[in-house]
Length: 296
Image 1 (cartoon, rainbow, N blue to C red):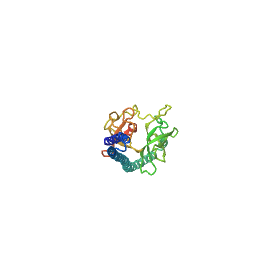
Image 2 (image 1 turned 60 degrees about the horizontal axis):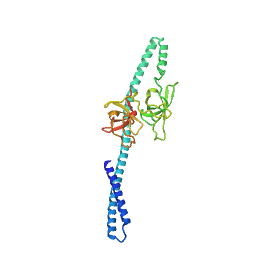
Image 3 (image 1 turned 90 degrees about the vertical axis):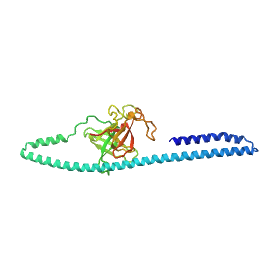
Image 4 (image 1 turned 60 degrees about the vertical axis):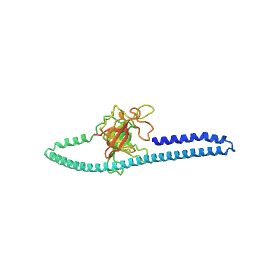
């Protein structure tokens, strides 16, 4: 970046130096061929300097853009690979959980049959217990419409569930269910999901002011997490949440990510630097309101 600025300054200087030369050429009498030749030679050399500086600056801009695009491609590829690894692990875990649940369910059924056969009066108690267990307990706090949440969903075609960034569309108090929509604004199709409250984690809510600006990072609800703490964060340039570790917390963050118009500031633009699981040594910058404690 510094060399690009140097070349741009050289380009500006070469253009500025040409102006007095061109003025002298216009003022020189046509009969004074020697002076005119010297002035033209000087202007030609300055034009060559301008061309070299312009070519160097253009090449450096092209390299910066290519590097930026490559970084975007690498991030997307890493995200795809990460998702595949997570799906594979989730399938293995689901298979283990399913086998264990089937075994436990079979054992409970056998125990229930034995208890019923031994004491028929237990049948009515068992039925009332099942009804009680199936009832949904009321939520402790309703997430308002328009809030951003982390939602555990099973996207169409996906091999397993994943956590995505979503927007709350509504809450059904009778069924105790949220309707949320994938927050991928660049996607032509944004699917909706109906989810239990246990599958929804508040990321940031909207204020009640007339401007309806999002209250990004609520420190009172989600305090800063220190270096080394395990977190659950939105992977850059995706709408998927993954596990990672804090490298630099917002209060110690001093640099600004490439391409952001706002500089990193603990108050106006708080950022974490994170190392996501399975990302080797690649450290990434994530806005503070998109970094959450690990779900229990």
